[in-house]
Amino acid sequence: MTLSGRVALVTGASQGIGRACAVKLAQLGATVAVAARNQEKLIDLVQQIDAQHVAVGGGKASAFPLDVCDEGQIKAVFKDAIAQFGKIDILINNAGITRDQLVMRMKRADWDSVLNTNLTSAYLCIQQVIGSMLKQRWGRIVNITSIFGQMGQAGQANYASSKAGLIGLTMAIAREVGSRNITCNAVAPGFIETAMTSALSDEFKQNAVQNIPLGRVGAPEDVANAVAFLASDEASYITGHVLNVNGGMLMG
Image 1 (cartoon, helix red, strand yellow):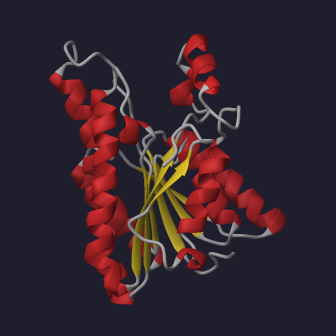
Image 2: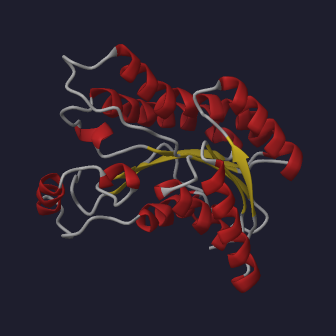
């Protein structure tokens, strides 16, 4: 499996799943535009990928500071990335946040913030790449959703709604652009060890593991491997699909 000659852009790339995706895509030969708010972490990631390129080959990376809640920034970053690389073949919509609270106490600002970051930004990013993908008649869009967008979670009405919305967006885009050899799929992680989940209580984590048939928490690399597959030519006949990476926590 190779992504040599492809250009990928990953949002939320500074840590966790996004970082692992960027590293994996570069390992397979893609040139990777890494985008996130934390410029210091982005620079560190670019250095890691470039060192990997020198040591074992693969693609290189460039950093693009980006707040996905700012439509103007999204347009500017995608314009700059296309100007630098000539195209974007692969888009990984990974940026996401949580603002957990029981629905009766949830502030409107926390609802809006999560929906804008997790769902609206994906729609805006897709708009920026779809024109060039249509012209070249090749493209891969992968949206990072969540098991909680499939089964819900108490205290996460905003997060679950945003991730369920991503699944609907994925299927709609897949139907719109499938005839032009562009696929749009989603990856739905379960319990993955990231900075976002590290804030959860030990009791919650222990209960979660008891509900995972494989008996362990997932790693960001588990998700990155699935993303890389969907971004490749090997997945050319898969679109509108939600690939579960959850250790069996949710089946069917």
